[in-house]
Amino acid sequence: MLMKQFAKSKYKISQLGFGCWGIGKTMWIGAEDAESKKTLRKAIDAGINFFDTALVYGNGHSEKLVGEVEADCGRELFIATKVPSKKNEWPASDNSNLNESFPTKYIIEKTEESLRNLKRDYIDLQQFHVWNDKWAKEDEWKEAIHRLKKDGKVRFFGISINDHQPNNGIEAGRTGLIDSFQVIFNIFEQKPSEKLFPFCHENKISILARVPFDEGALTGNIDPSTEFPVGDFRNSYFKDKRKVEVKLRTDEIWKDVKSETESLAEAALRYIISFEAVTSVIPGMRKEKNLNANIKSINKGPLSQELLEELKVHKWEKNFYL
Image 1 (cartoon, rainbow, N blue to C red):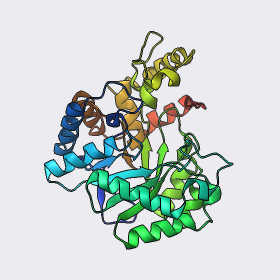
Image 2: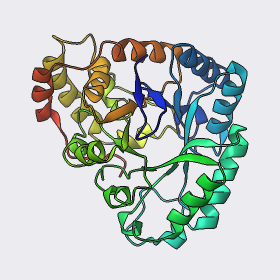
Image 3: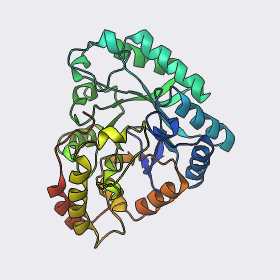
């Protein structure tokens, strides 16, 4: 497993990370704890050391599973989690102020709650689960970071950037307190490469690429006949005529990538790691078969420069979370 340096630190994390939203069971139907833990162990055995979870994933359930597996395997992992907005809003609205969303005491309390779930003394990477860059010049979030680092409870701090707002965090990045940005980046959502990636490369801030498969669209498995279990958030994400649109667009992408890849999912992952600014890509992997497929894809390395140029035409301005 290829490892990349995390931000300015001495630590290295796996280029393929493990996204832990699905194993928390919140909004994803069908996850089973026994299978999730088995897949987590297999990931560790394969050399994956970066695991991205959040306090709200199953109200701490995802964190607890990761903590249990880390304790069982006897290996030290690089674990990232997130502090939710006190207002429980995604994304952070322009009307929200920092005191309502991330007061100092609240950030510290939620970090301590995550530590209890993980059964750890420290968190490698704590992240704001949403952000509004108008808060960048305010002091409360900075005070929380300083206190948590001083007390040894957090090693690094980052921002999980709002959906499809890749530049909404750069001002915070200028403070020198942000070690990473987690951002949606995939064949459809290419905007982060325009401004955010150059900024992070210059300032040695890590990029953690989330939603590499666009919630399943870029696996090639979504078509008008696709059905999801009752209660699964993808029923909303792919509502109305969206599945038809996805199928039309992914068919066109496949025409471009099939000479260089074995599947659309492989192309989706290899596209992301073709960008030097990306430290790790974090697909959800609830099942061992998905883990194995993702490892195989990543190990093939970046796509050719010629194909990357061709894929620029497939960027798609949308936000299916709305």
